Length: 265
Image (cartoon, rainbow, N blue to C red; front, side, top):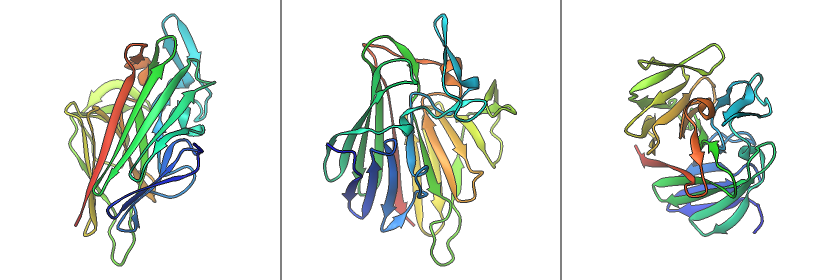
């Protein structure tokens, strides 16, 4: 199948999947209102095979050190899959499955599969990373850009609410220092720990409430941009390939999921 855009519909919800643009979700409309910031770099892109920044673009694998391109100098950021074209495995009216084969500069052969499933009041994204050969460390995450304001007369900006067990202290280099601190008020470009699973509520007063949930316990919240806010569930913290590696093996792929559920206000 081609990598042309795919449109999924369920009730009054509509999702656009863009296999050819990094496997990202290009749009999510509820009742005709677009929830995601539009643009080639926005929507919601998969972060894989790592999330956030890798310090100096280097991570250790056993006795060796791997070097990734410094696409956010002096670090490497957000994985490689968002820069590639994904293939469509199957698509129906309300579900799509797309795949991406890991290639250079990622040094290990493997495949990423992302399933996108829409219902009238929820969107579920499920991703897995599997290896064909050697084991390797990896992370999975999603980077949605939610519109700060949905428009309309008197529309108010989104409010972000969550309770975290801790916040990763952030150094001047934007990477966790390794210390866990009590959560601080925003603005944020920070990683939070939620041992019971990610649970963040975005409320556009008088319009819509949307909950971002995941069984994973890490979430980055970024609200320093005027146009959008980001709530990013992921399988580990930034620089996690070095500090908290999750191993993909022939017997055990790495899997994660996030569900966004909404209701009208």
